[in-house]
Amino acid sequence: MAKALKAKRIIAMTSTTNKDLVFEFGATEIVDYSEAPSSMLKFWSSNKYMLDCVFDTATGSQKHLDYSSKAIKLLKYPNRVTERGKYVQLSGNIGTWIRRKLKLLPSNRLLPLVANTINTHDLEEIFRLLDDSNARPIIIMKPWDPEGLQDALNTLNGHHTRGKVVFEIS
Image (cartoon, rainbow, N blue to C red):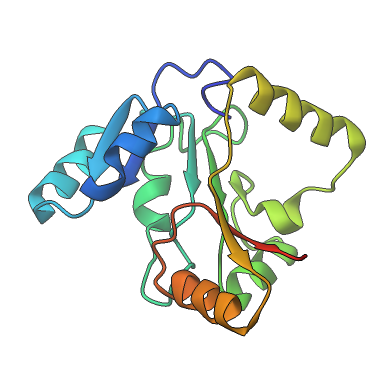
């Protein structure tokens, strides 16, 4: 999406294993979280207040993962009410969603599943952007049988799935 929106700088935080894949999907820079902690510290400090948007898919996806406070410090104009960077958190525990619903989170912290309503215009725009960027999903096909279901669950429980699991029902 960022590529389709003509973002000049698209930074992906990933492991060495997925580096080529992430570049293929449009990243212009990679931060390898599997490297020494000093490289992560360097990234957090050298990019403070420099980014327009952080799309966080890790925070809340596992119990121990929370990058939100660090990620928010990367956003431009942190003290402005308008025109400041946006932080979009994809996952979260129930407490995060309740705080958002009660408007206890900053206005620039978005949680897509509760912050936005879905409408035809927005979905058409998303499809257009994906089409313009030639983005294609990675699909992991599994048969719709007990072995396929177990294999899919094992893949997902690894928390490092490359793509989306889809069942083939014949």
